[in-house]
Length: 529
Ligand SMILES: [Zn+2]
View (cartoon, rainbow, N blue to C red):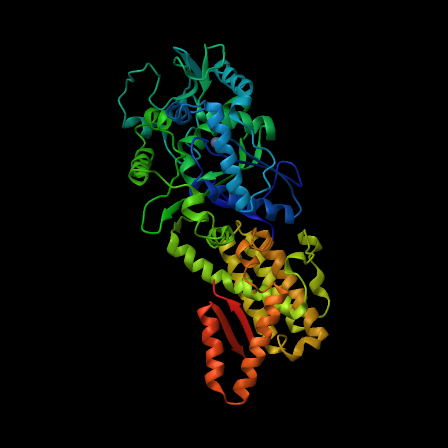
């Protein structure tokens, strides 16, 4: 099945065809680095990291750019507040952002350009737009004239005439239309400023992305991504500027991810919408206003908490990533401790399968060699038995889901079924007990678990042992030997009908949060999570 993606521009799923065969250029709008990252900042990178993994697995060479906005009203205000420079604050917060991305397994970004390093490219686009009559200078600022762009509004599905109808005909600041947005802003004293043909100033927010995407990826990029809150006005304006400048399509596919909502309602973070020019210039737009209000409501007294203190202090990052993968990227996600606790419970079964695999085969799951590409994934054609056919069917289900607009939710469903099937196979062949010498069954299990690793790694999960597992005891040979001794002593006293002693052993272990599980093929142990 060919890969199909839903593009916001056409509002339908389209067959994925890139500008250059075999290559994908992907641009994701990054953060304004003025405060520590919160969970809302992590969603886009995790999703597009997964998309990159999957496209690479499908044979594409992917170049992924995530920009860093290091000049903006919020940065200026915050730096003044903290008594530091915009540059120093941006550097510190970029490090925090990258640190959190690494924690979540996002390490595949190819370029992270800083906006301030592309001022020349931005000015080139602005000059071009003025020459072509799409933009006009005004008292040190430069504005894009929306009414000159015949298809302005095509991405968000807004009609400019309708948008303008709700506003006053005249604007106080001399702009031709209230919807016109700033490409360049004349600087006030004390603000960062660059020389320009229109006087000292700094770029507007939207032009940053147009310039960086063009410089690093070309006039037409394959995938442009971002949160749904960026579709208007940010992406609409990026598109208008870029296409008016180059006369070519700006992006082949526009992918918008759904936003996080607190599981009790409301949006988490999402400080993408800029009050500076987004809301002030396009105040007629109901959505922008509503978003601003919601943001204010949610920000409360201390704002969205940093992802480090609010999430990683309580949950393993792999749980967070797995949770984000369990929903389709376009859907809104209800986020909260209760939801992460549920995920932690359901993901634990995978760790138990991994531990069981190591006990049975003596092999390290994390060191299993896996196919890095879809075409190399053909190991299963060996024996045409029912186990292999079931594996092939589950793999097909997983890949079909991912081909269908990166439906990670359905792919996760296939992983759960694969886990169930492998656990069933271990029990059926008594591999935890006397079946260990069944080499054919062990070989099948290795094939199945290798496939599980290949597929789950595409979602960026089960890539390496998680921190808490290192102390679970299961991989400590000494502890394991002690536990086996206790388990066998308990079996002996039970056989001798000395149930009081058997209960004493179990209770003592339970108090230490060690669980014994009696299964038809023997007793296994694990520490409670
Ligand atoms: Zn952008």
